[in-house]
Amino acid sequence: MPQHELFQPGVLGGMPLRNRTLVAPMTRISADASGEVGPLMQTYYEAFGKGGFAAIVTEGVYTDQYFSQGYEFQPGITTEAQAASWSNLIKGVHSTGAKVILQLMHAGALSQYNRHCDDTRGPSAVQPKGSKMPFYRGTGAFSHTLEMSSAEISAAIAGFVQSAQRAQDAGADGVEIHGANGYLLDQFLTDYTNRRSDRYGGTLRDRIRLTCEVIERVRNAVDRNFTVGVRISQGKVNDFTHKWAGGVSDAQIIFKAMEASGANYIHTTEFAADAPAFEQGKSLAAMAKSFTSLPVIANGGLGDREIADRMIATGDCDFVAIGKAALAAPDWPTRARNGQGCREFDFEMFSPLANLETANAFALKNA
Ligand SMILES: Cc1cc2nc3c(=O)[nH]c(=O)nc-3n(C[C@H](O)[C@H](O)[C@H](O)COP(=O)(O)O)c2cc1C
Image (cartoon, rainbow, N blue to C red; front, side):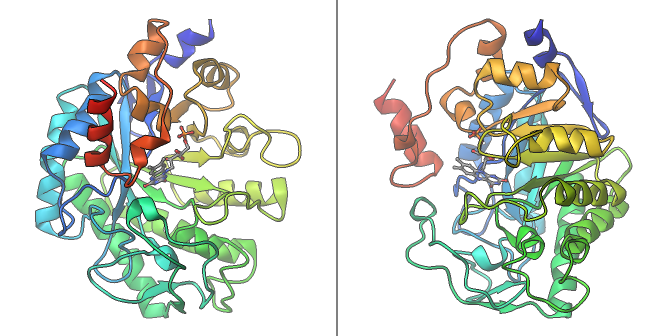
């Protein structure tokens, strides 16, 4: 019975999980102006735990007071006060039986707002494609970015390391290094945004180096049982259809490098998690499974319970992360288990902003 698989307990790094369902990371720009989280966010995250999810990957949390912040009202974990606010939230989620994985995110050239600094940094001085996201309070084109110096790269790595330590001290069960979706680490990985000629630019092995160094440095700085995962994608928030130029061979190099760096899991995200990653063949999640011995979380369109069940049953992934469907039904796992239907996600929930106030007003209106 495939459904049986979705509700089997599992282990992710050092973390025992009550079933195979996680909440996907989703930025909700609902912290206070200084990047601390409060009761509104705590209630939001606790609802997923009460609804049966085994773990929550939090929204992307910024990691330093230089160039990492991406959005106004994005939470950070760069100060003791920010960490203490997370500690309260994490206690609340733990009381529901769910685990918390903090996603550590450096926005790089895609930063739309940064209270610490006016300009942006990326691997190279390349104008990002696309435009800022209005539902995160952005308007117009992305800023012109400047090439990061070696000292700025070292500071960014240190930011990930210190943030992971703060997350551990705040009671989180793990961290996820955000290597996906077009943000800093993905900018280094991507051929057209990385034109560097130092050790962080050039071949694919050079372009994945920064992600791997971050994984390794974080892994070495936290306790053995504290889980350190990594998220990876082909598409980006500002380039949805991007594909890795070398296809399967690139995937093999990337996944093996991540495993060698000490990652405890790989979290792949695609528009449709079960679709072939390239023209034909395996999905990205299934490739991560076949090229490594790590647990794999698959994400993208898995609010369809049958597809989620099937991916686990066939061994194409070990866990599923649910995004928009979890917003429509924070009790998605309980409903799926009982064979109940779920309300469809409605984009009006993000209009005009993808924050919690807008979502709560939407919920009241549609109660
Ligand atoms: C409002 C919103 C915010 C998001 N923020 C993040 C984020 O902070 N970090 C991240 O890795 N992905 C983020 N994503 C992507 C989701 O984690 C997920 O990959 C995407 O929604 C596809 O999964 P789904 O089909 O289950 O919704 C966000 C998605 C949405 C809709």
